[in-house]
Image (tube, rainbow, N blue to C red; front, side, top):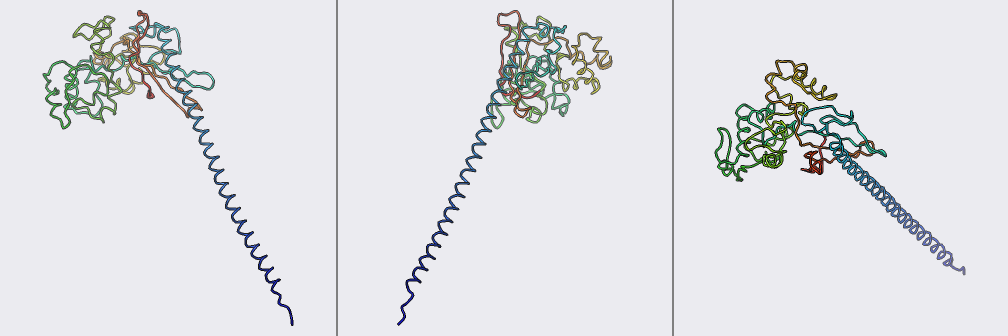
Length: 351
């Protein structure tokens, strides 16, 4: 009688089971390795992101402090160089430092600092300008004559101290009748953005160019208290007239609104100011001709305001990272401090 080969079959089954288990173990090892690879890859990606964020933050911080340094460099130059802040234009002893023009970039260790000093006399002061200059400020912004009358009269009603409204203006009764009522201020504008509360000033008009043409520095109260402006007057003791804008500081956009001016005249004035200030009527006539000079001189002055806006931008990584700050200052070289900071601009916009 033959013996059964059961043990061999049992041994073969055991080997197959062992091979099957080895396959499962190999599969588990591969899954674990794949999982670990994913974790490592995600960790590496996360670390690269963290390094990039840290680098950008460092660069942004450097750019911000570079911009602050640029503002203080400009303030030092305003104090050091009296010709920059003269009531009337004069010779400046530095070709690099001039107001109302782009100042050549500077900065150490790969930092690019761009600085600009603008005089507020090149804008229309909505606290002190008369009706004619306010009308000029809204010229060329797409308003009809009636809409222009509404804006001009409403601005003057907003800032005066009485409740008698002008023909096209608005006083407390108008604003209290709005769906969301609020009082008429009857006082100085504290910020240009306050215009959005005034009758006729729409967001489209405000952001479409009007805001860039205006300033609130100084208020009438400040001008009378600190600058010697007589009550009801519009001209400072040094001769600067708030019913006019400085030809040496006005933007091309505002110059274009002057009567009889065309693009060629604006370009001629802007190009001339790159080299030197305009100092006399004869220079003006040479630049724009007598036809445009006569009607526009009621709006223009050669003097500048004691208020300046200084803006500076710090750039890093070839300009890919940029931070800007600025300040509005009143310069008084006769005072102990030489200047007062009126407003600090934490996020200055490019000019």
